Image 1 (tube, rainbow, N blue to C red):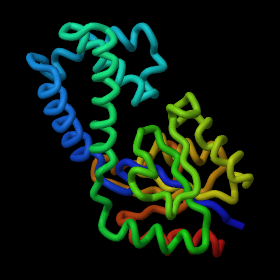
Image 2 (cartoon, one colour; image 1 turned 90 degrees about the horizontal axis):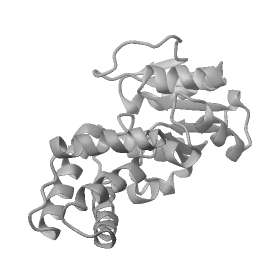
Image 3 (cartoon, rainbow, N blue to C red; image 1 turned 60 degrees about the horizontal axis):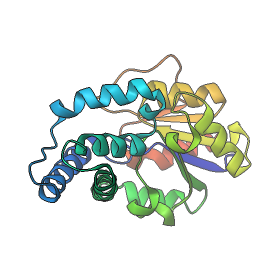
Image 4 (cartoon, one colour; image 1 turned 30 degrees about the vertical axis):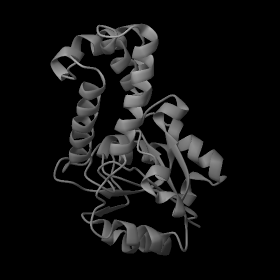
Length: 230
């Protein structure tokens, strides 16, 4: 019996690209106002980014820690270390606030509320979207991120964490995601049921097949119903 529906977040429940572009612009404006003479430009950050990843490759999946350290390091050409650290912390709050101001796909919130009446819902994500900042905690009872468990999808760690938390078997959980490899293949490998939220950016399947495929989040209840009835 299926008990839990778990979701990827970015590009499954909203289009993440415009969210990040907007959050980056808000971050840049805040930093350049707070630190006169400082310019938040990707071309200037690139060598710092490469150096930080060379020193600590785990930052690749520790997105919040990575961005904060990147900002702090770049600010040290304008500020002393304590002030750079303080401004980087403030900058991350500005970024995370904007990063969690998303425009959900049409019908997504109503769909989640509908599904939550019959199943436990949760998030399994490589990103740093926050179900509390997003207001999804009314529907979702758990959330696990790559930063939290120490490994990003397609590694199985996130799925194992969700299974342990919910106390269910893999066959009792459905995973919904847009990425054919990181979501569908990875969840299939653990034994979960999978529903692929196909997008124009990722139109091709991975190495395995999803149990169901949808092109619109509003089709999700019917796809779940098909799996329940099998």
